[in-house]
Length: 109
Image 1 (cartoon, rainbow, N blue to C red):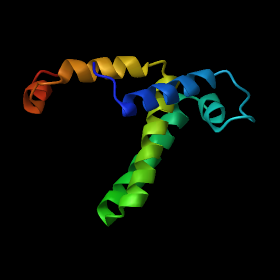
Image 2: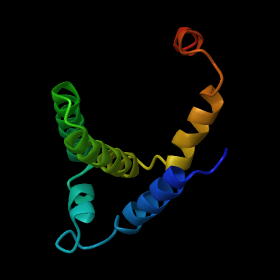
Image 3: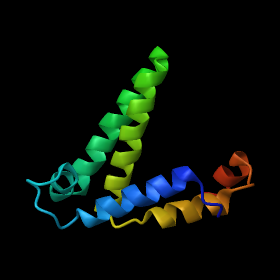
């Protein structure tokens, strides 16, 4: 996999989230979310995804950019809540690279 600035940023963010897993929920928003459990983390991810969709429909690039950042953060929190490593997600994307989306979807069970 070719490392990009984006990947490095996501790697650092994932590491920060992992480090906050055992932190005091009163000291960190991430720790507070994780302490509420995977279901709450998934709910927050869904809320942020909907907000990003709304901004995409409205066409406000700045707001969509901010909401997209929230989506990525909350996705990483949700993954951490279920002990799914960003590296595993990236490996899955690497596996799919160069495969037609139609072919990939047809191969799913």
